[in-house]
Amino acid sequence: MRGIGLNLVLAAAKFAGGILGNTYALIADGAESLLDILTSLLVWTGFRVAAQPPDADHPYGHGKAEALAALAVAVFIFLMAGWVGWHAVREIMTPHHGPAWWTLLLLAGVIVVKWLFSRRLGAAGERTGSTALGAEALHHWTDAMTSAAAFVGIAIALIGGKGWETADDWAALFACVIIGFNGAGMLTKALGDVMDSAVPQKFEGEVRTLALAVPGVQALDKVRVRKSGLSHLVDIQVRVDGGLTVREGHDIAHAVKDALIASAAHAISDVTVHVEPMK
Image 1 (cartoon, helix red, strand yellow):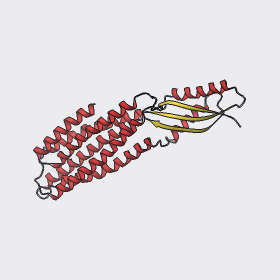
Image 2: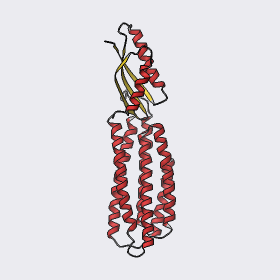
Image 3: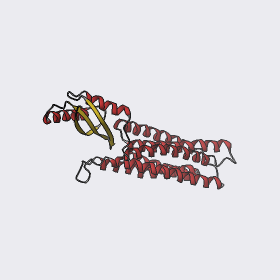
Image 4: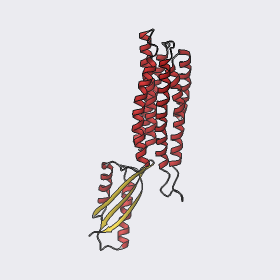
């Protein structure tokens, strides 16, 4: 919710600076901050839904809500890039006065705040493995990039003087390319979570190592891991001595499940273990 409050303050400052300072780049930036509020609400809602426990209709939990929220944020990043780009082209084609010098000070403050906030959310996303937090961090970063492009453009317009009034609009147009490129990366990652893409080989290797370390496990066959919200679900097939009783095989399966869930290396919320006899 802090991100929502931050964007409200920044949006008001950008709109005021854009209107009083005669720069459309700041007005467009302010509109983007308002859209940031919507995406922050999407991420917050995604977390609320993803945190709900499994029920009869969702036996695997509600973790996909977190990935869907990230997907929605990625879509909004594309929409914002298109919106800012369209208006930048319109401003380039429309003669207007140059911006006020003090708008550079406002933009400098916005860039610093957004960059720090992006780093904080990015670190939280890496720590928790949250795709939605990563998308939100990228969203704040793209906002900082738009502001940085506007800063460069306004500076060029002020230094160049008459005939260079559209420099900030060209800078905003260039920022749209960067925003679109990063939005594509986030969209790919979010789609991967929704479509249950394979986890990194290192993660799967660590799961295999933990399972093989359990007494009684002689070999492994299939190991499948998928991300669900902030945790992972594991489906693993272990081979044990064919002469063991059903109870003994059951105890080994439980030991494998307990070992994986207790692992501090990755968040694993549930494990399905299939026991097969050694050939």
